[in-house]
Length: 168
Image 1: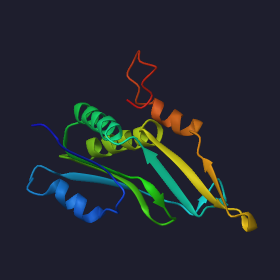
Image 2 (image 1 turned 60 degrees about the vertical axis):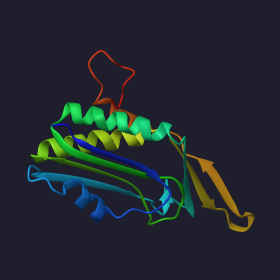
Image 3 (image 1 turned 90 degrees about the vertical axis):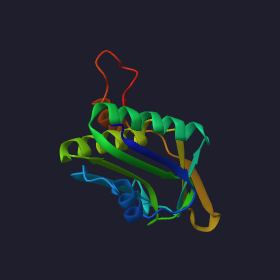
């Protein structure tokens, strides 16, 4: 049975409980659901921020994420998976993204969720700009660079012989 995959890239907030309920609705085979919600922090590298702006290429972002969710469903026996990622200006405390995976057993649900979170952090086609409060001069906006420790975490998912697929 093929996993039921839902991918949404949206500006609007989402309801984690409603999305999780939709993922499991009608299935008695689900024995485990793992959910992760990324939330906009109030600081970046220890400095307070006013907002975070996420940009993406519409259509391309959804297709890329769908491909990685399909990869997760091939690697682990998933019943379903949901990935939602927001874009636009978000303020501290707002949800940025969620990953939910459903399987008959917890190990597969945890592994698939971890794989997808590492992919979203390192390879998903989103660009992040931090808006810092700059005193009297207004707001300073800085594009966020990739982090070596995120890349190192994603490298564990590389297929043997494929160094170009850190998070695949």
